[in-house]
Length: 457
Image 1 (cartoon, rainbow, N blue to C red):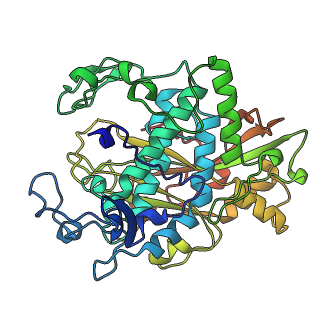
Image 2: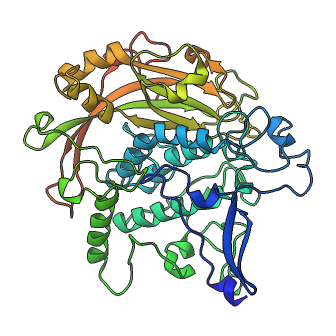
Image 3: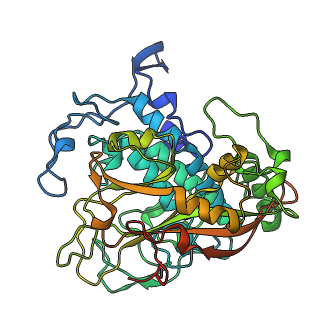
């Protein structure tokens, strides 16, 4: 029990290094036991199921036939860690930039915490990158991390979710006046549909010391639970000092444009994006995004809804392979946004379960500029370039292609946003107005047309 009281779960910072940690890939590990050092099978590689899944709550498909958790399983049902890392590395820049945007741009908890935000693009919720990591690690072929009903059985789930907890703790320091706001509940096991959820709603089934029922109000800080993270030293100093120190630490890890905070890159870590001086005007440049709106649940009473189960939307700048199995490694791929949906979720007609996410395009446009394919990041140059080269594709969890027009809730748009490079490593960039450019997507399948509204249902 004394050991359990000091047990801490490590986090996997996939925004800094998208390579799966060796700790969850190595087949054997050396540990200290009462008998000395011993080599044992690594329990973090897989979990062996104790029996078969129950009929209720689990979909009866290929995943349900595996006797242990797998990642990107082969035809023989064997994990393929090399494929997982390959897919993660192709999306490393997207994950990196999404996280930095969420920490530096999003100030409202409702927009940071989930993909249901209804503000104007760009979108930068923590949930969008959380979902993509799930599906990328699960891979095609039914890997457990890509399935809502099975994901927590894979040991890597816990390293992933501790990182989500860490990023939330960082965001809380940066946005100390924003938290849970009252909203209508869609219903849970203990909350009736239509009731109000707020800071006092029980977080069933979790309890704290002395069996006190946990709520958002009494779970606001990690301090209550006796832990913190390297970027959050939130004791013995003022809130202003804590925030300033956290900004500096965030820049040291993720800042995409600060020369003074460029880190010594560890092997496999994602390099920061540096905006060349030729693309800056008085410290200002244009950021670019592909924005996605889609309904994520399977239909019950209406055909207005999208696909059932997890699926992925791939954003490209350039030509795209005809083979959907090549999309994840295609040289023109900018990033993949996974829609992490539960097979067992259902939706009644009229209920809204729309996902709003954004894939950053700026890195790819900077590379096009360096190859002299693009004059500048200004709309005058970038809009016609994106109108010609911006493409997207959809694939189901098994890599089956889906034609975009067949998902009649899908809408893709392109937008630009003014940004000013931070003056020092102790500040974040500042952001200006965002503009949607329908010229980039008009006439393309599921593309936003002139006169469309991305928020329209």
